[in-house]
Image (tube, rainbow, N blue to C red; front, side, top):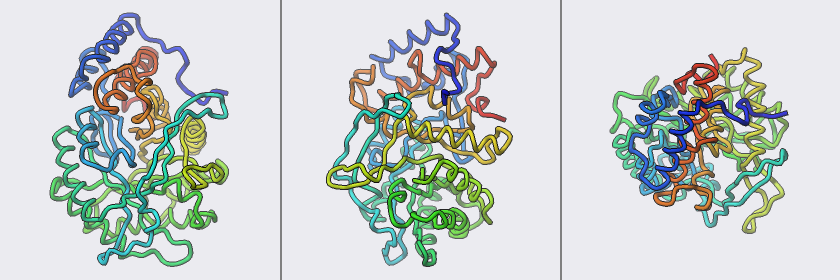
Length: 405
């Protein structure tokens, strides 16, 4: 049984299809318009604006936290390519003395490998493997990077969001001093640029946790999910100063535990403001560069995510009870719409921004620009094509109207 909600053959009027094929061919050689959303609105009568953490974004495409969002040159390229938002590389929380309980995650990437992967369904895709984990430079360097990234974000109308891995204890108490110092330091930088807006913040439950001793017990994970939103909210300088998002991992337990995590989050004493669903899967047996146990993506990831989301929506009368951003094998605009049909207001992309150049039609420009050309204008699999199908079959013209209501 197919996991997809869109049909294989999209229903697109002939004149729209001709325009789309024209634009796809044109922007394979020409530069993408700096405000490509305006072109889509004018040419196709489609509105691609959306939200992340309840905040407006120009389009639903964002870059997930990782090795592609750890320097200012990358953020600049993303702004020029027209991304809606960027999640900065995950920084490891520390206290005022610089001590880090999760210091083992502050490891520099030493090697990356992009490779094809075939899912259990037979569908082919890509996955990226690397040894590194979180931000490995100083915390002051991260604050400087965030400050510069926020300036670029304002210039390009692109939301910039910090990501943090805070202390996650097995049996001991949470180190509250790390939560307070890190959150308030980040919030201070944000307030310099956006004094009247709350700061969106991602708390990263990374896939590497799935293979660590910290998360071998379900009770440990559920304890984290129950307590972390409260700790973060109470770490802010004042109520409403931050919007907390939990980036939930795919655990090594059965699919039903994904639902148990979601129920725990929503039943907690303090709820997050939004979620990121779901981070990569973990293979405890795969070896890479001398390390056994690595995270992976591809079709199996999106298949599991769709199963988990469909089960979750069924519990809530088909409507997501909280805003969420999707992540997992978003390799086309069509896949972004598949997540939107399940309630995602945005999608975070990582692997698709680093494929071999032969996988993109566009010859010039950054990898982000080449990817955006495909994500938006591909005549069969792009965002415009999928939205034209929904416009024709359901009368939907706005991206946010794709979401179940």
